[in-house]
Image (tube, rainbow, N blue to C red; front, side, top):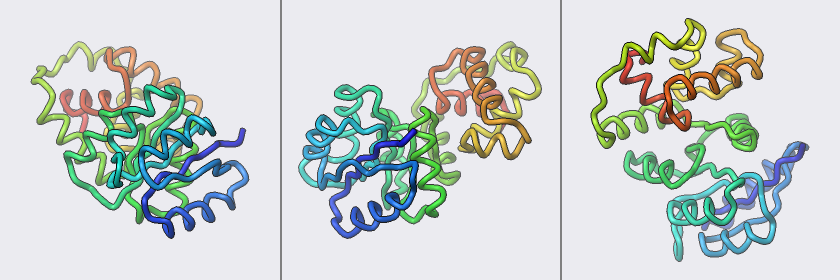
Amino acid sequence: MTVRVLLVDDQTLFRAGLCTLLSTRPEIEVVGEAENGQVALERAAATRPDVVLMDLKMPVLDGVATTRKLRVQLPSCQIVALTTFEDDELVFDCLRAGAVGYLLKDAPTDKLVEAVLAAARGESVLQPSVASKVLAQLSRLSSERPADAGALAKLSSRERDVLRLIARGASNKEIAAALFLAEGTVKNHVTNILEKLEVDDRTQAALRARELGLT
């Protein structure tokens, strides 16, 4: 399956370089570019991308607001923030708006490609440094909830291993490599973990791991 990608960034040279880089990958097709959020919404409606690589600091309409609108406009489209900023509040706002990933622009090429493909599969990708900030921010902003020993008891030993790695920001591919499992097996474990912890996504699961003392 070819992953259709829309590039959103106000820097023309950066978009051009990113387009060239991604276009060398046979599994990725760049279907459009946009220089600000408003244009991004228009291009997304016209091209219906699978994944949007979203800059956050842009004129007219910033990346967080665009992400929020795009999640309503195209619910099936996955959004990965790609920015030079590692500000705690910006990270949290972006993920709360609906982004499934957050990478810095100096991320290695293979990490960027992996993030695009993972996002297309509905997985989240966070750089380890960003993941730690997200957990810290969520811990401060979320209401206090006491650790539930019963919730931990619901998880198998392997599920706890997977949850620890989720809390570190690892993707399914990275978890599979670390635990010598097939990616499909990891995906099943993640589904079971979300169900057992009664959370909606990996970010909430990571927070619960922190509350349960698994980090």
